[in-house]
Length: 364
Image (cartoon, rainbow, N blue to C red; front, side, top):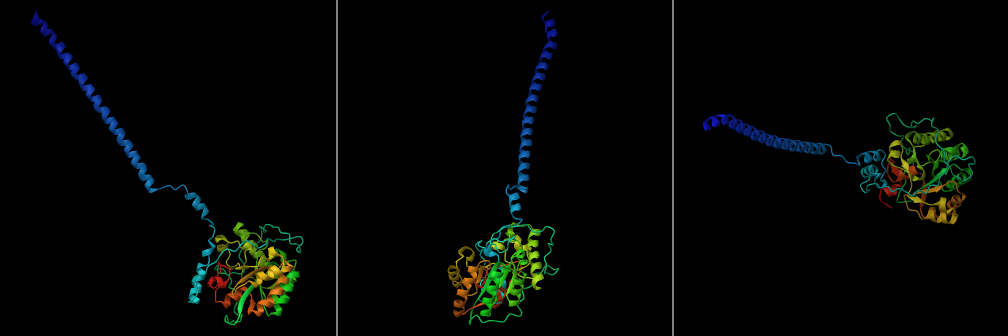
């Protein structure tokens, strides 16, 4: 009986063992699969991280790049280095010269624009005509600017005299300019007049008188704006309109520009193929408006200086009447900007900013 029961239980026992083995196998497989899944996930995560690192290494992102690019379109100029090219040319011309330097002058040039009453000193500003010709006149098609004409200027001796350039901004204004011309004639002298185009129609005879006296006429814009605030088209309009007005009166096309307020940057220099002339001696006549004080300022000059004055103020003329005899006795002679640069052997460079030849040669 027991043997029969044992025989009957054999299949059951085998089944139980098989079931147990199956369960153990399933559990083992489950553990193996779970471990592999974790390893795969870890591997994928690691690869993703490495891929991101590689991507960032190849294309690093600088959050300031966009801002830098925008700022570099028309960067503000460092005027201490603006005449580096001029300095190189001077070194070739004279072994003793140092690299030319140029410092931005103070914004002392008083504003002046087209006025309903041109005799008034009220200031204002108007926009240039958007329909005006924006091509640069007076230049050839290669983009090279007209050269300053100095071939007829006599050669002077620096050892014999002290030379300075008298410059007058913001004219024409007959009450002052004509008096200045009479005074210059007494000393066989010339000056440079930087004219505002919007005033020329009011005083065309004065403009002609300046040219006939032998003084130099140059461009001081049409409406006296800060050139650094203008678009390219507005900038050319300011210069071309004034050149056209001057040429209509005199037949002469100016070859130099003085930016209003002395304001200049890379954009202005690159846009205008002319020498830009500032100054190194500001008489501050616009501020002083006192003949004695202006006279003291004029007489406090140095050889090779470009002296800034304004032909809007009678006090400036009165100061000149006091100062020119004094300076003349001290051996000073009065010439135009072009003459002064030729005397010192310093070229007037198109697209360059100039203060004075003495400064550019390191003499002052």
